[in-house]
Length: 253
Ligand SMILES: [Zn+2]
Ligand SMILES: [Zn+2]
Image 1: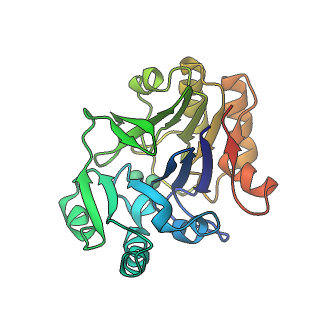
Image 2: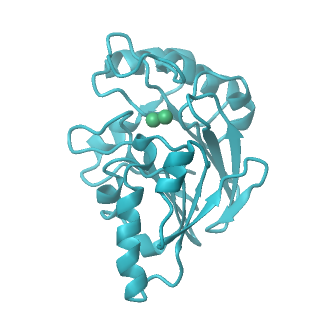
């Protein structure tokens, strides 16, 4: 079984005790941290510790997806020193922008350039990538474990290739950053709820969760728009936190 915890779901910056992008994937064989945005370390420690991670994947090198990677490496320093961690943390990430890639090099991690043509195996799961259209190099991520499929859009504008990539996924966590009346983004390289739901509908995914939400967004409107297009019940990533005292959590079945 694969378990998905949405640790953070705000786009751009965290508010209200929350965190930006971060998803913890737990299989029977290990744990993967997908994106490590601002506030994610604090949320991660409600669930597990760095030494229990099989690896970290960064969809792209924007701060709301990797702002906490430096402090994750500090946490690893202690784990390595005391022997709780046996080897450096594997961090898979795009190598652009170069100055950020250089910045995340450390003695506590082995940073591996993310190669979209080369699927990875972590925690017993197969991990595939799709280059999406954002303002810098960015990759959607598909994780297949046994017969379960989880797809994460990362940050992207509407692209047809994401439909194929997310085809029949059990869970599709898709960004929806643009919302009428919100000042969060000028819109370049992002989607609104209707576009996210359109991809989910065309891809025939079983379950849709919208993430990377604008803190000043009209959530009722986003929910209404996405439900209408998707045609099935969908969720905002914030719904899980509201319904759970501890952490966003959903189990794929
Ligand atoms: Zn972002
Ligand atoms: Zn971004």
